[in-house]
Image 1: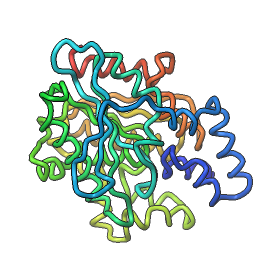
Image 2: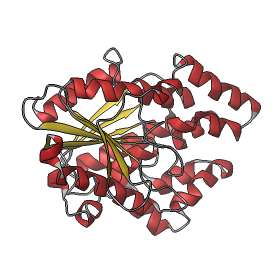
Image 3: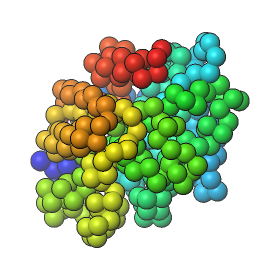
Image 4: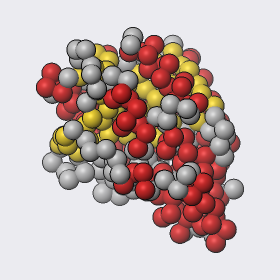
Length: 310
């Protein structure tokens, strides 16, 4: 079960780092997860197509955005803004975005951006959510120069990034701090997260696994609830959500809880459930999203077309 836990907490950039802290069997499974993804988990991310530009959105060295413009867009293009995973304490836009996304979405006529944000323990989860909102505000402030349609923006994130985009999409204070609101977000796509209800997730894992949550979320139940998208999903929320997940029991349960809470708040929700278990499945859904033949890409493309109207 430990490899399932690692998949829950650790973003795709940390496959080998997480495995090094696990048992020998888990280390082997983690390394095989990378190899069985075509041997491209690290290699593909090191060869991402160069971004059109890098944009700063704050004074910290981590507060940067890689931006890829839409190809052959007729007028301002919709924007997909991606937030990487890494257990809130690791990862970067260079190693946890996935190569397929930066090629696929611009080819569809969408601008694509991937952000870095401040990491735990130097920053809090609250500051990370603020970074997501601040990065969006920086892009929208340059919308004309970047060719972005500021009225058609979707937030997308994997693992810890899934939690952060879901939090920004359910608790409007982060957007308000950046001078924005839910009206500036057309939709949210959390990918295989498992911390939508933080207290429930902490209660469901063992003592060893719980240590991974201690630094990001602490021990204060009120703070844990405030950082739980499923517990912040009473109206209003961002208008549309697409929840993607593989077959990890905690990830499935957490996605179902978030979907139920969002629907109770009057938010449009669609879910996508795909093959894959444990760490390998958690890695694969992020690495393959953007591959036109991957089922999660097909669903995402359809949902984005409906959300963006193109």
